Every structure is written in structure tokens, then in C-alpha cells.
Image: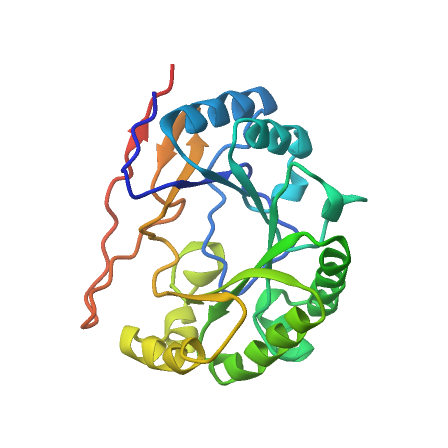
Length: 274
């Protein structure tokens, strides 16, 4: 049986490490297992039994997972969990926006213009236009959406324009549950590359002062400020590595104090399920 901290009700499950983008700030790593479908189905039973109320299907890119993603989502939904799909939107199976087993789709918007977004999300262009098309589909289907933005030095001046865009989309029917503002962290396959910290990094206070004016505005959706995407009061992260279930975050966790602090790489706990 999985032990859960009472305040953590959301389980993010990394299904596979592979991705079809190469984002400059990617906080994910490659060093974990691709889950088998039977393994994933068994695991979500454990999560539901442990009392988790919501399941986030992540990766890598979960839509590249070789298992039946919709079957896993449907089973989690049957168990009473809110199912969220955290995707970059590139691989989009026909009818995804109408899948009843997926209650909410999480998509990225990291720049107010195609040039700034596409530069951050991948060396190739065209990704922002793709996300816009996915948002249009989700608006038409009535599916609930969450949008995530990784805030860094290169897009910090664009938050106001992104806010206005999201508010306009809501007025046109987008069911936007929340907008998450994530501070860039120098971890993972993209973020830990040489010079990424100085190039992209924002201090805690700088990030807070940047987000506060946006959060104070009137808006029809929730806005969450996330200073450390590797840690959360509500979310547990899970993955399998060499056949062992682990929890924490699938990257060397960078611990940073409000005053600047240093970096540390604690051992991540292992959990055994029967």
C-alpha cells in the first residue's frame, strides 16, 4: 500500500521518458522506465486506494506511450479520480478532445508570440500554432483545460499579453480551469545544460514581483504561482526506475532558499508495492 501525505491529493505519473520536442528549459530526465500497461493499471489502483483524488498522466510525452492511454484514463476515472493529461499537444489522436475518461488537458503556452514560444519549446517552429489549434478543439468540445507557462528571463515581459489572450479565449468559450506560472529551474535534460541558469534564471523575489500584478487582476480562472516546479504542496510525482517505484521528482532536485541558497541532490525515496 502506498503511503500518502494527507495534504497531497494529486499523483503525477511519468509514463515514459521519450518526448517529441526538445524544449530549452525541460526539467525532465531520460533515466527512468517506460511503464508497461499492466504495470500502470495496477499502479493507479494503488493510487486510488491510497486516497489520491486526481491523476496526472505525464512523461516525457504521454501521447507517445505505447500502452493504451485511454484505457488507463478510463480506469482511473472509474475509480473516481479526476484524470488530467499533461501533453505538449504534438501527437494528438483523433477524438482526444472528446474522450470521457480524460477530464482535463494541460497544455503549454510559453510566449505571447510564435517566435518567442517556439524558440523556447523547440528549435523548430510551428509549435505555438499547433497549441492554438488544440485549444480551439478543446473549446469546441467543452473539455476543461489548464495552461502552463514556464517563466524565465526571455518571456518575463509577455505575461500580461498571455493573460489577455487567455481571458479572450475564456470569453469565447474556453473552459480554463487554471493558469500555472512556473519559475524556470536549472534541472533536467534542457534546464541543466551549461549556462541555462544565467540565461533563463529568475530569483524568487523577482519571480514573485513579476507574477503578483497578474494574480491581482480580475480573471475568470485561477492563477497559481509555482516558484519550484520540482516541488509541490499538493502533488506527488511517481515513476519506475530499473523496476523500482520512486517518488519525488525525476531529476536531481535543486534546493534553493529564498535568499539564494545552494544546490543539493538528496536521495529520492523508493516505494515498494505488492
